[in-house]
Length: 69
Image (cartoon, rainbow, N blue to C red; front, side, top):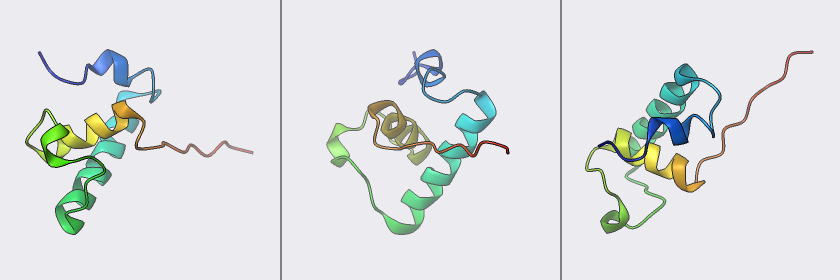
């Protein structure tokens, strides 16, 4: 079973496409800066994309949406 659950993440982000976009941006930041918001031993996933999803699940990443005028 995957952690965190896609169903749980979709309660935070309103679409699968936005979820992928946010996770990929955060994953690239982790690779470039080697900055993690949790201790390395607290992550369940080894890959940065999974770690980005975990940070989103824990509320460490805030998704900002721009409303159209």
